[in-house]
Image (tube, rainbow, N blue to C red; front, side, top):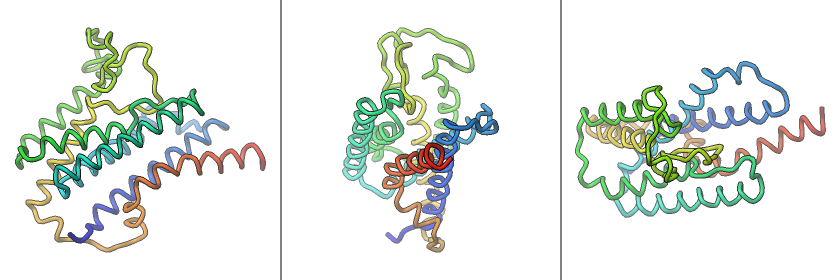
Amino acid sequence: MKRNYTLDKYRGFTIISMVLFHLCYDINLYTRLDWYNNIYINKIWQLSIAISFFIISGISSNFLDWKMNLKRGIIISILGILITLITYFFVPDQLIIFGVLNGLGLSMILISFLQKNIKINKNLLIIFIILFAITYSLPSGKFLSKNIELYLYNKNLFILGFPSNSFHSTDYFPIIPWFFAYMSGYIIGKILIEKNFYNHYGKNSFLAKIGQNPLKIYLSHQIIIYALVYFVFEIII
């Protein structure tokens, strides 16, 4: 199947947004950016990036059979585990446990077992969106903005979304609620197929080319950005 450049552009835009967010994060380590530290701006920006990645990945899963989704999920999960090990040994203050790659990887694995039985259903899309919204705060020990206490938290089931009080990760994307975002993307993908969206390819562009290399950019961008910011603030300034 020919590439859909419109989807690539959406992914490319999200990647650029992610790079800029992390650039601001690194700069903020050296000089305070008041606007970036605004809780609403920071949270909305961060959420827009994360949700977009899960939706795009869910959409893309429609183009792969269950074996390819399973393989892709295992590879992404292994990369996520490697990031955990790297941060544990080299930057423990920035430890990442079950970060975005693990969240995406496990979602891919789960969809590989479910995709044969999922039919196009707009009501199902609404259900997944609602589930994401109402369970979003569960990993923080809240439900609909109210503090809750569940036995599951004591078991530190952080993969599911029920971390213990001692759990800490600078990047955390558990199955609840993020698999619901992924499934929303998967259903959107099915609806777009029904609407013949993928026969409207759009045009290739610089933005689309960025969107065609998400994993390479994700794995390398933070190292490059931090090195540049360090050079500017520690050596030049």
